[in-house]
Image (cartoon, rainbow, N blue to C red; front, top):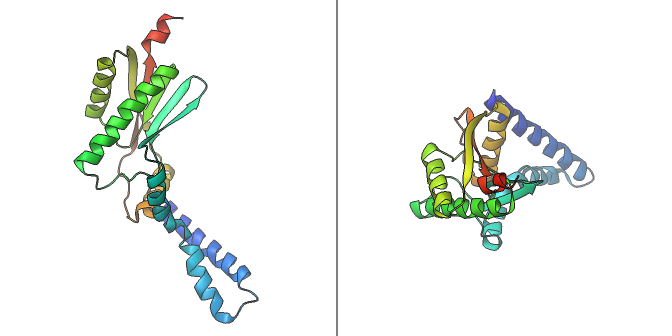
Length: 186
C-alpha cells in the first residue's frame, strides 16, 4: 500500500509538472517544453540543497513547538537521519536532552516523538532528567504508523536525502513526560 501511495504521488507530480510546463511553454518554441518540464519536475529534489543551506543558518538539531501547556520535541526537518557518525548521533541526543529540559521548564507536558526513539534512548533521557533534578512522570507508547504516513516519510527521505528508503516500522514511538513538580502545585 505504501509503495502504491509513493508511486501515485510521483506520477501525479510528473503529470502536474507536465501540465504546468505545457501551459507555461504554449507560446514558446517546440523544444521549450522538454527543457522546462524536467526543471519543474526536479524542484522537490532541490530540498536537499535547501536543507544544506538551512543547516548553515539554523544549527539547532531539534525543534520545540508549543501549544497551550504542551511542548513537542522533535528532530529538525533539515537535519539528516541516515549515515550519522557516532559524534553526530551523540550531538543529536544531547540536543534532545537539552531541548526536553528547556521545554519542561516552561511547559506542563512534553511530548518526544521520533522514529529514532528506542527503549535505551528513553532510559538515557530519563536518567538525564533525574540528573538535572527534574522530577517527572512519563509514559511511552506506540502509535500506529499508517501506510500513508510511511509514504510521506519515504517521499521526504527521497527528496531531502536522495535515497530510496522505506521505513519498515509499523509503530511510531511516543514519549509523554509530565513535570511532576507542577503536578504538586495543583
